[in-house]
Image 1 (cartoon, helix red, strand yellow):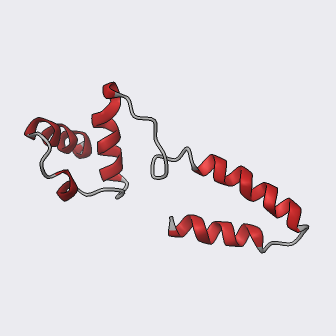
Image 2 (tube, one colour):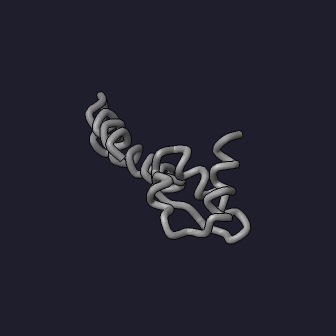
Length: 82
């Protein structure tokens, strides 16, 4: 999120009209909301892959999966080892 905030500031402080900056920022935020680090549509069929992607991107850690089943943890570790 810190990186996004800096990019938004750069977008807003560029040359041109303030209204143009606003509409560019709105479009960019809509795109960024679709990023798995911000918002994701979860499906049971892809949950393990999504969790592995979160861990791989540093959004969550393996420690935060404490309490999940050993099968899930093993599957996430297998995906990450590929």
